[in-house]
Length: 469
Image (tube, rainbow, N blue to C red; front, side, top):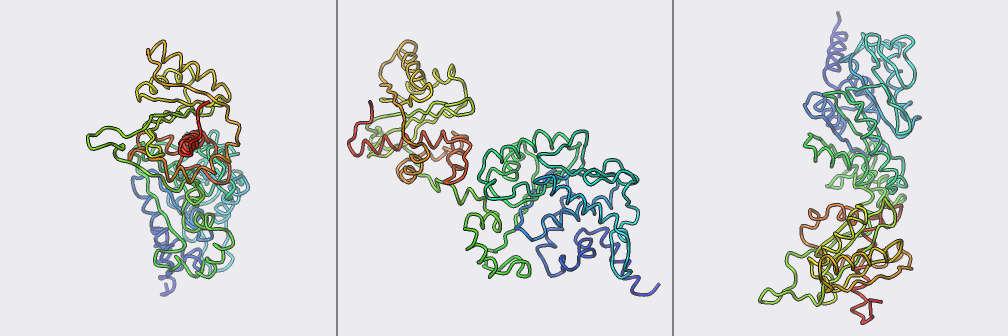
């Protein structure tokens, strides 16, 4: 055996053992030895494969090899273990089918050039089972249901998997702004895909970080809350030192041109893995307080304690009741009641909180049943809690909700103060305020709407206009 054959044999053996060298041997024009980010990426894939971690999330800019690496990883996994059962999910059936075909075709490729290394040179024992090689579902000759490609609109019925690989579910900024679509992605992942994962199986999510509420963001939050190990790999096109992660793939000149053309928020999501809603969110900051305003003796300096309540318009909406102290024409949030509970519960709880915080004046929107809610709260305080201290007023809100929220947003950020631990005290309200978008479709606006009511009433008092009718 000559020296060249020995070298080739060594390369093939190395490709079986090391995922990067597998990629390098099959696609040397892309997986170059000098592309350090690809070496690191492939090494992370292999480390995850050999670790006890259950989930890994990879966020990478477009055209930098996300899907290509995922496809090669499936090929490598099946070459090493013919019993792996892999399920991949993509944006739609077309993309998931393309992913599947690329893997299947690579395994089936026949050698036509002795100088070109193909898959069967590295893993000669891997073949597609005859009669079981459809585009979306196929098996190896010595395996069973080794591969299924699906999507949120597809099916996964009857298929279990040892590897679940999700590849880029969001196709555009429009979808990233749409909370309904993001919610559907999460429902599909939790209710359909997770039920297919076998004991000890692994999950690999590969995508651009479009939104804080996208699949990657919600998966990170969910698995962390369940104390499940979750590895997150984030790679940015533009590095902190001003260099590009790979000049050959995306130069600084091209990057600057693309950023200028597509806008800062979309570019940040695409190339820097900064969720689009962090750039496009309405409220960019909030002020906090550690102690309420008080005099030297510790007595509160609030001129009054007020509340503003936006009742739930529909069953899917939230009731939001905010209690706040007024000092120097600024609002200090004392309590937030943010819930989807029924009115039988919220009427009593709202009344209880108004009494507990010694509220002077309570304003309740009368739209969509708000008047009846206000009357019930007033009755409960007087007949059950034995107090008439709080003046309860209701009124009809006729102004455009979106316009009100937008026009008052700066005042909210500059003149409303929250307790330093408000994120922990009222997590759902906090999330609703932090994620509300200037543009695009917001699934819920109850928190910003009620907060805007607080701003309007505090601002009106500053100008001397009566606020209660």
